[in-house]
Amino acid sequence: MHFSLLYAVVLLAVPTLVVACEGSCITDTTAKMHNNYNKPVACALSNIGQEIIDTYNLNSVPGSPTISIPTLLQPMTTCYNNISFDALETALFPHFFHGKCLDADGNEPDGCPDPDCPIVCGTPGSIVHFYSMWYHISYNTTVASFSSCADPHSTPYKTLQKRILAHLPESKTEAGPGPQVLRSRRSGVSDHDEASTSLILEEHVGSSLKHILARFPQRLEECCGGAKIPSCIWEKQMKKLVLSFP
Image (cartoon, rainbow, N blue to C red; front, side, top):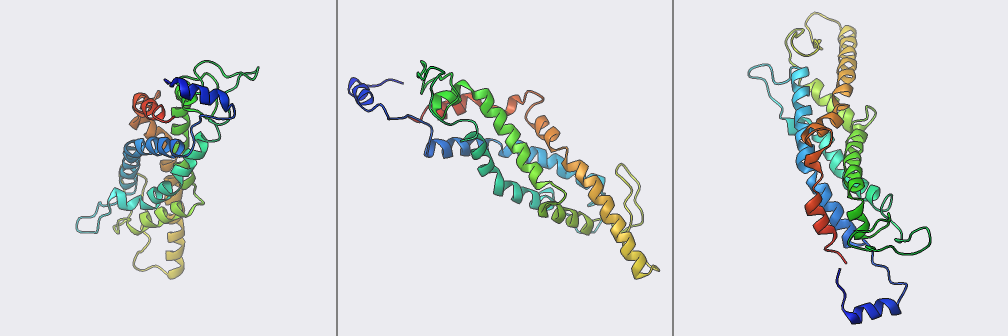
């Protein structure tokens, strides 16, 4: 960063002045990274939604009401949208990037506060230097946010499970690529037997659904281009944004 002579004098005269990523720097950089994940997350959810539809033979009966992937997964997407931004902001600031850029001797190294600061601190230059940590934290936090929504004890999970049960085919036991689906309403059975069958069906769906949702990290990795997540780094555009803040 280039300073005028007058500005340099002001900095020397006011040693307590700290140039840091705060305020709009925090919210804008977090928002950009969060928005970058919209497409990869949508890709992962689309794959999960299709797996759910295929596993439980949803939309398989001609003439019966169908359910789209966005509608099916709405409990999960709403939950994720509600918690993911705050979770990402907290994981980046202040859990990792925070504090002054001082080395072990209490000195500020060259490149600090920017453009490339080798000390973990709360400045743009530190984000640039430790950008690999930035994008890994962002990826892991995105996974953690969805995993929280997919907890079998969570309301979104239970709501999704009910949607699946409501759209199961009405035909007899289905055989196919997915697990066999027991029919919950059959003629000639008592209310007690029907309730027992419904409970078995609910437990069966819950057990397999848990495993499908647990594959979100794998699905997101695939949508990010593989193990090194090359499609979810966005280094050039993010560094440019970060360094646009003083």
